[in-house]
Image (cartoon, rainbow, N blue to C red):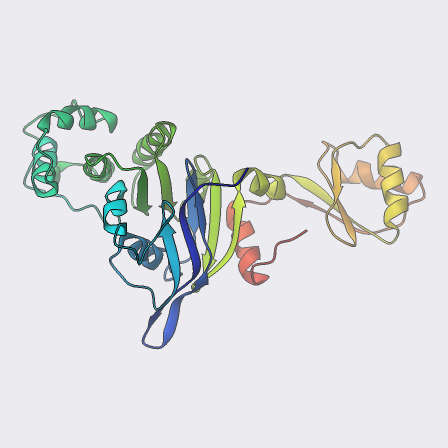
Length: 309
């Protein structure tokens, strides 16, 4: 079955001062996904979000939102399904949470103010004292209120640029739980973050970008498989090694390249080495690996976007 993409880009390029800050990017965000967008500062993540929001125009290439090309007149109507926090949420710090949402309703043309209380409840701010102004909120509370503002328009796609940045562990968990709950309600989410250990807990799909180039798109399942704890065994004779692996009772393994096997069974490297030697197998080397998403990203950057095993 063909995937339904909420966002799809085709050789999307943005040039500033003769430099491509976004370079021929082909991006695919599936309906109902949480797309973890990973890259160093200046990699092009925020620029792509600004392009999607219509705050910037591509220098080259195209993109579509909900299947509608960005050049078509109906794209303005389509963008009403999208809400975003790019960089920091816009809040009036001299007001309380309720009045911030009331003010947001006015400038968004939303007349039904009865949606404010349920929206505050969605982000866990319904019990905050009415006399507490935003200037006295924690960073986590401000971030949750910023998300509440986005929800007023009942979006189908949320763009969140570093929503966990600067938060303490409690604030990170609060924002993470909100993201997870919103996605369960059917909202597709594009989220960038430098806190990859937290992004790992919610992302269903990943896009890795560096210096404007999209290095890879990969599902969480595929990424988990590639980062799983394993023993890498280099060989001279792959057929002989595979026969020995089966003979000694190893069941979870794969030929990861032209010269090595990855073994995922729970076995100590020294025990594995001794068993292979007893079977008369000559190996080149043996290493353990338990890659993190961060390590995977840096390997991608080093390999120029090729992490094929």
